[in-house]
Image 1 (cartoon, rainbow, N blue to C red):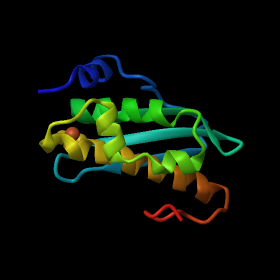
Image 2: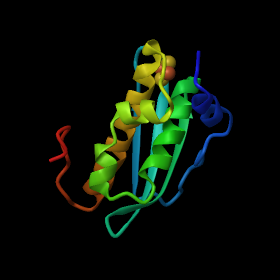
Image 3: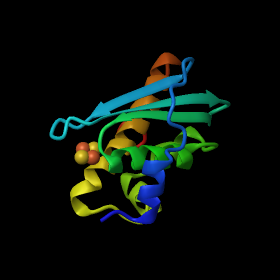
Image 4: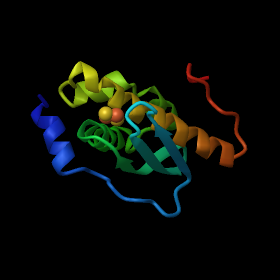
Length: 131
Ligand code: FES
């Protein structure tokens, strides 16, 4: 039921670690399934210098967070904010419909981590529209 890409990122997750001195940390959970995802960001000159994750959840959530950290590496904060759950699911060559919410967690965790960083910098928080 999973694509090869999903299996690959589940079996060999990229960036699965903590960043102890992260500039922004976003933690989100899905109440229904109880899965939790944490994204860590290291920001330099407005760009994602390092990104990592810890996910306590299903295989699709692990694969989504692994793919999401790969996708935001080197991106500006604006570009990272724009990465949607759809883009993550597409990069994984699709997720079964009942697993799409797992990629939503990745988008939400990135947003939470970016806003955690902005809060620590004394900057205004971004809303869901990215403004
Ligand atoms: Fe909940 Fe995948 S089943 S995140």
